[in-house]
View 1 (tube, rainbow, N blue to C red):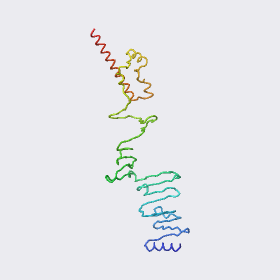
View 2: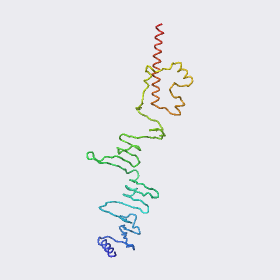
View 3: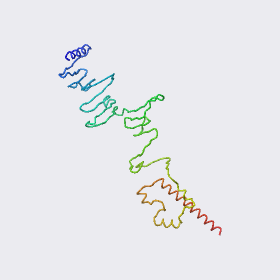
View 4: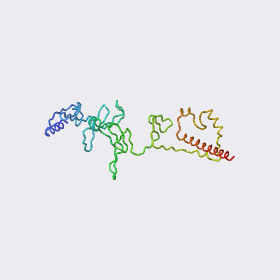
Length: 262
């Protein structure tokens, strides 16, 4: 073992390097001038080119600016420092501050993006998921203008925008502006024009309105405040009342004609 150490030192000297090395009792080697340590007891430098403290197995060629394994910090890094470039970090489940995490750390302040791409032989590379430096996420776009920018269709079981999703697929606590809203319904009140539809006499409607302060079959103000308004259901009820009013007007027109003919 001693002869092997002497040979290594001689090779380094013949290569024209300024050697300042220390052979430790356990057989490890630390080449401090160029900051190379293998199985070292004393870290040659924090800016080392190669620093190995434990078993390492490499089969092939590696070109890298930084690969770092921290022990006992239970952390493994690929890449350069977080403030200078890109970094991929893995943390073990027993890490004291970031257990079980995998981090992409990229760029200096206001720089750096994360881009997930796929390749197709006919179209080339296509961005599928893009995260820019300020946290905007783009799906199908590399220029996201909001926290989530999607170029394409969105399918979701439920969406909450500062609202309560209990029993709802979409909850929005705020104003909605739209050019068009389509509501699907299971039926429509054309039954009012059926021959067997029982149209309440206007006298009964008058009594009901005086007692309840709302139309028959229409929710009261209290019910709307407590339970909200169902757009689809309310449109059905309103159409039912419009069709009933049409029947009342037809009956009134017939009565006017009868009075004219007397």
